[in-house]
Amino acid sequence: MRRARLLILASTIGMLGWGTVLPYQYAYAANTRGWGGLVAAGASSLFSIGALVAAPVAGRLTDRLDPVRVFVVAKLVAALGTGSLLLAETPGLFLAGMFVFGVGLTGAGPAQSVLVLRWVGQADRRRVFAWQFTGQALGMAVGSFVAGYLVDLHRPHGMWPAFAAAAIGFTVSAALVAATGLGPAAEPEPVARPEEAATGTGSAGIRLILASPALRWTALVTVTLALGFYAQFESGLPAYAITVLSVPERTVGTASAVNCLVIILLQMVVTRFTAGRSAPALLVVVGAIWVASWGLLALADHVPALAGALFVTAFGVFALGETMYAPVLNPLTASLAPAGMVGTTLGVFSALQTGVSAAGPLLAGLALSGGTGGVFLAAHVGISVLAVGSAWRLWVLLRRTPAEAPVASHSEPAPAPAPVA
Image 1 (spheres, rainbow, N blue to C red):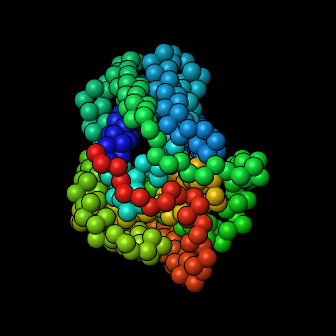
Image 2 (image 1 turned 90 degrees about the vertical axis):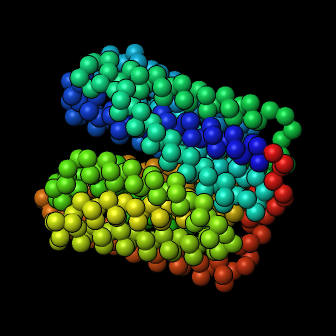
C-alpha cells in the first residue's frame, strides 16, 4: 500500500492549490486589480472550460500512455498555470493563466483514478478512493484556511503568496507520483484493441457510453448528483444563504468548515460500514440524502430564527452523502468501461461533471434572480429525486443483467492482494 499512500499524499498536496486560489480569485480580479466582474466571471468560466476540454483528452492519453507520465505532466501544467498568475499584469494574461490552471488540475484526474486501479487490489479500492477524497477535502480546507492569512486583497500583489504556494504544491505532487511510479509496475490493464483506440476521442467516448445501458444510467446518476449539490457548493448555496436566508458571511464559512470536518471524521467509518454493498444502492442513498438536505434548506427559509443553524446542518448532511458518493462512483464507472478504455470513460464522465458544475452558477443566478429561493429549492429537490430514480434503475439493471459483470474483468486489473508496504 506504499504507492497508494503516496498517491493520496500527492492528491492532498495538489488540492492545496485549489484551496489557496479559487476562493479568492474573483474578488482579486474584480476588486483588487480593478478589472471588473466580467473579467472575474470570465476567469471562473475559462477555468471550467479548460477543465472541460482537458478531461476527455487526458482520459484518452491515460489509455494510450503511462498514467504516471500523464499525471505528472498535468500537475506540472497546473503549476505553470498558477505560477503564471504571478506575472499576470493584464486581464488577458490572468484569463489565460486560469484556463491553463483548469486544464492541469482536471487533466490529472483520469490518470489518478487509473493508478488506484493499477496499484491497489480490488478489495481495498473503495477504501483508497475514500482516503483520497478525504485528503482532497483536507487539502482544500487547509489551503483556504492558510491563504486567508497570506492573502491581502487590498494590495495588487496580495495574491502572490497564494499563487506561489499553489504552484509549489502542484510541483511537489508531480514529484511524489513520479518517484512513486519508478520501479516494477503492477500488472497493467489491457491495452485498447485497435478499433477501440481509433474511437477514443471525446465524441466517440460519448457514443460508447450511449451504447451501454448501464453506462447511460451511470452518466445520468453522475450528472444529477453533481448538479444536485457540487455545482452549487461554491456559488449557489452561499448566494442562497446570503440573499434569501440573510445569514452572515461567517455562517457560510462555518458551513464549509463543517462539511469538510464531517467528511474527515466519518469517511472511514462510512466506508467500513458500506463495504461490500452494491454501489448503485449506495448512490440511491446519496440521492435521498441530497433530497433531505434540500428539505432542511427549505425549512430554514420558513424558520428565520434557525436559518443559520439549519444551513450549517444541511452542509453536514450533504457531507454524509459525499462519504458514500466519492468512494463508489469511479470504481463503478471503471467496472462498466469497455476493455482498454477505462481512462477514456473516466475522462468523459469527468467532463460531464465539470460541464454540469460550470452550468451550476448560471442555474443559481436564474433561479435566485427574483429574490426568492422557492424556484432554486424546487429545482434541486427535483434534480435529486431524479438522481434517486436513476440510481435505482441502474441498481435494478445490474441485478437483472449479470452479463455486465465480465466487462469489469476486462477494464480493471484482476483482484489481487495489495502490495506489502
